[in-house]
Length: 126
Image (tube, rainbow, N blue to C red; front, side, top):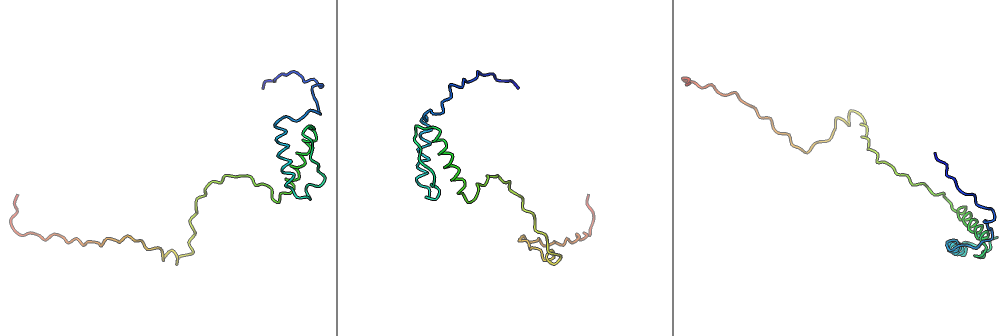
């Protein structure tokens, strides 16, 4: 496997007090809406952050997500694709059931009795 070389990022480039970008602002707006619809018992202790404070906004989104997931009654079930199973024939209950059987709808052809041809009397012609 090849190693990908990259230039190190200088520590002075990291700004913990940077403002949110547009995507972060939209996400925060969505979670503020979710926060306003939550019951009072779940909203206790949370304060809506300013969009200018990126760290507080991230902590707010993480806390709302944690509380919503904790409030779910059942965990989400994974979607599993099942293959169709062939139906197995039901076992017979015994000889009585096998003897009864099912009558077929097709009529059986009557056997024809073939009679031997009568001998002809008279001269043979060839």
